[in-house]
Image (cartoon, rainbow, N blue to C red; front, side, top):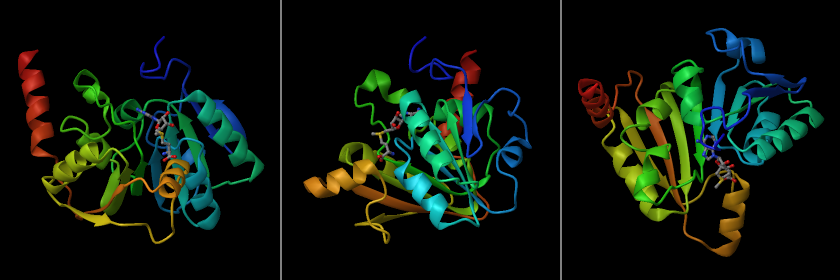
Length: 229
Ligand SMILES: C[S@@+](CC[C@H](N)C(=O)[O-])C[C@H]1O[C@@H](n2cnc3c(N)ncnc32)[C@H](O)[C@@H]1O
């Protein structure tokens, strides 16, 4: 099975401080609540890599709940071990493909903040449909953000970053601000490395309106696809 299959070529798995478990059976409305019971607001990170940001943020904000999605099993397993070692009871990790999990498993508008740092840019045009940010996928990603929530984004692929900035600028109810740095310093392993190397980075903080709408290009793409069928 290829790395790009919906479940990343493996059984879908979740990890909490209690250990790793199969994801089957948690794809329903109360699933997240069962993974991390409580009332704290959720934050979501897509493509968390080795988990540096997500785990540090979960440790610093015990009153909040954190969910991470990562397709590479070795990174998921590494971060799962760190999560258990640090006994972080307010964070859960999912192994799988972010767009699949967003469309098939996760509730909409559940996360007060969504973090996407250095997502794969898929520069070849035939691969661009795999991007987390394209007219066809942006609704899925922003659809996870709660009303009046925030999206945080960074990339070193500046062309991709400019396309994402333009896409978000045309998104109804989204206001994107460029940041030269984050108030808390470099957040992820990639960011720390690129800052050390002096590589330019495009960072966006995006505020969503309280009553979010769908992106017109996304809706047009969906209508065109269904009309073809
Ligand atoms: C360039 S790395 C950045 C890792 C981390 N965010 C950082 O900034 O250090 C991109 C990460 O996203 C993961 N990834 C790529 N596409 C993904 C997808 N569709 N769903 C979930 N994770 C994905 C990769 O496995 C990799 O760990």
